[in-house]
Amino acid sequence: SQELEQSPQSLIVQEGKNLTINCTSSKTLYGLYWYKQKYGEGLIFLMMLQKGGEEKSHEKITAKLDEKKQQSSLHITASQPSHAGIYLCGADFTGANSKLTFGKGITLSVRP
Amino acid sequence: GAVVSQHPSRVICKSGTSVKIECRSLDFQATTMFWYRQFPKKSLMLMATSNEGSKATYEQGVEKDKFLINHASLTLSTLTVTSAHPEDSSFYICSAREDRANTEAFFGQGTRLTVV
Image (cartoon, rainbow over the protein chains, first blue to last red):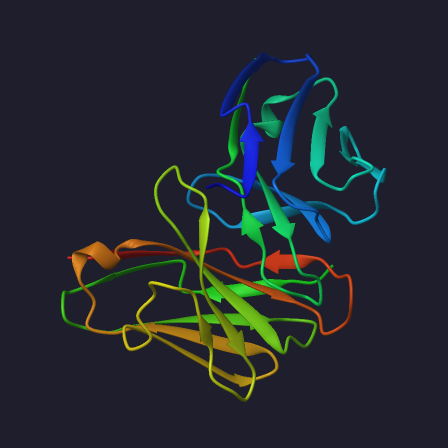
């Protein structure tokens, strides 16, 4: 079974529109990491969330972790073509700088 | 911010040969590094955890003799794909975290391996 589910699988939005993508864990998280990837390239770190109810923002991207620390959402305001890519969430289930388990990723396309 | 450098970014090799991929943490020390493999349009699958000064910890189903990992210093881990076959063609990517609690995990640029 998949420990980390991301939804939707893919998303196409018009430039300027807001959007939200989700990452749901089957277990309580020590940490939740959001990354962005262009196909065939490395992962760009976006945000790390560790505390229940935590919310972080960077430029037009806001990520939240729910109180139970099992679900995270990532919201993009006024999307731009530069936001297009694959968004991956990675879960730290055990803490202590351990490995990350990743979801399958969400492919975001932004139409000009 | 912390940077992880991976080299080479692309490599083509013949079947039966070996290929070495390097992962370096440029401005921090990493006792532990991680090697992932990514299939087309799939998520990252952890292959092994590289431990400085000791043996790597491999995930279930990953052949230790096939994918040799060496973590000789606090800033360098290498993955060697031995006797490569076309099915080893994939995108390999490494990750490293600083040796303190609650830190981000940074990733290298990835290596596209093609075995012909």
